[in-house]
Image 1 (cartoon, rainbow, N blue to C red):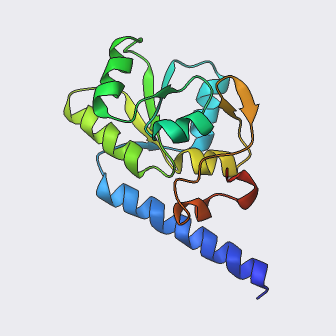
Image 2 (cartoon, rainbow, N blue to C red):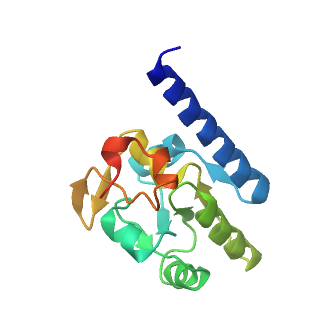
Image 3 (tube, rainbow, N blue to C red):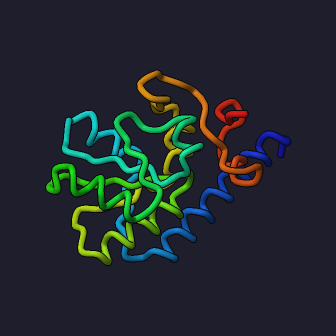
Length: 158
């Protein structure tokens, strides 16, 4: 097996393990795929995007139209000022922090809340659009050196 093939296998296994941990830790949180979200956005479905990452991460790049909501209180504020009939999609880097916030929102009685499985890292790894403000960009905050390994190298911001 070539070094590239080994690296790809390690990358895929690490992703598989992360997604499994998120699902096992937050079994009551519905997970949607990046393809499902992409389809929802393409079909102009009512979606409220909540970015559960830190302000620094959010300012580096995010999904177009997302609101920075790194706590359950900021998420609740965003939900209360928007159409409550829409699907609320929470995301972070890989899905753990966002699943936690989605879980807290559900506990507080919020309906139609889901987590973006694989979150921004998977979205960006698939070549889907990200922005900084309103400007298209091609880099993502790696969170830290370890988690950043789940992002394709050209996507990692400095």
